[in-house]
Image (tube, rainbow, N blue to C red; front, side, top):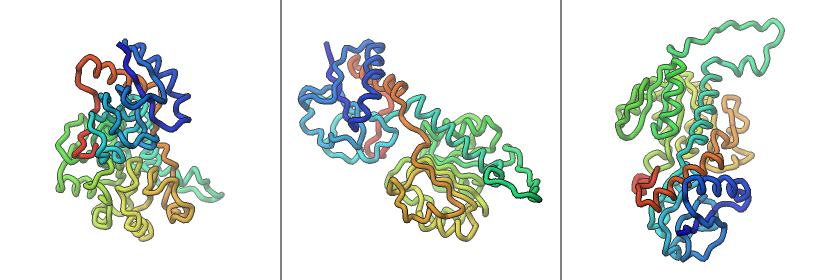
Length: 311
């Protein structure tokens, strides 16, 4: 039996996904009709980006699941018209891209590379050697798929890594912390803090003035998670005072970051344009196809979202 799969994303994404998604469905043994337009009552699965034109799921009466192309689902979970299972994107490409970006920037700050990349002047010969990674404390807030992968990689490089999550986790080579006391411990030891939490009511403005005051003087923040995790004004105050030495930020409350935002011009801020990781069509298509196969076989879907928790 042919299943109808609706691709609901920005039109320019269709060209990059059509071939790999068609191939992945074929390899998964799924006979599928994949299109960008169906009568709603004929759709079995929606391959979905939250910024697509599909926002009301009421008329998709045959729908079995919505398969998100993004890791972030905060803009979907509150949709009251969505009654079927929602799966978020967890795939090799997304995970590996995040690991590479986070590792690169943690090493950059650990080694003090900015000073040398920006160039020395004649007579300038500062031999201030960094500590070994084993003597550098790194804390990762958020120990989901991406956070755990980043924390594990940093630990394998020798860093002393703590990972914090709301619920208890166990990750080899990482000191796993949870709850309010664990958060305070993670912050108080973080010479480099990596933020990989989802955007939920519980995480918004988590890094506020009180949290920043717990961190060691001269600490660095790396945020490829969500812009809402940080109180911008509190961070700017901590940067101005030197309590926080630098912030490398890939995500913001408003994107693109407005031209008049102080982050653009602050000497202790690095702005990157939301490039820490991206869903790659080839690897993401395999995850989507496997979930369609599971749905048709009556097996549990992968990476289901807890709608109450928001991720």
